[in-house]
Length: 168
Image 1 (cartoon, rainbow, N blue to C red):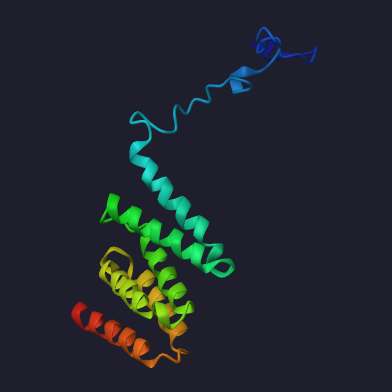
Image 2 (spheres, rainbow, N blue to C red):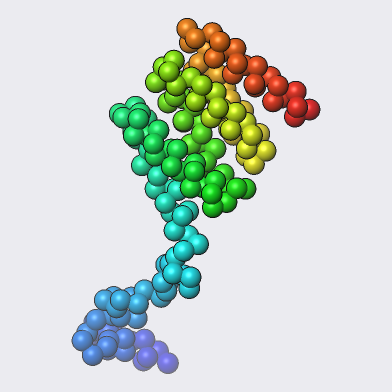
């Protein structure tokens, strides 16, 4: 038995294949053992989820660099996730938070859109953890409190207060 393991010549005689490679460990074959990543359905079920994720992560770096492009991507992300799974908010909730902040940054002409998107964020809040909700609301309210537009600010605070009154 000890002779089976003895390899005095330094070669891998017992393990070598025809071409001297070590394909037993995945060297060189196209079959990686994981199968088709798209699955049996051709990827249809996962394709919208991948698109949502791509839209979200494409938009994030553009928040400061190009807010209008980020806004378009976040809105597309929200729309796509909403259409395909109303109860799934993997990226939608954070995208809505970013949309509200971007719309605030774009100024007074977009404030009505900002309030509408904030309302949408609050309406899906039951689908996220209390910590995520708290962080989103705090971030948004802290950002807009410096606003000169007091009517939008009051409307946002009022919506938040009414939301928490209804939750109790």
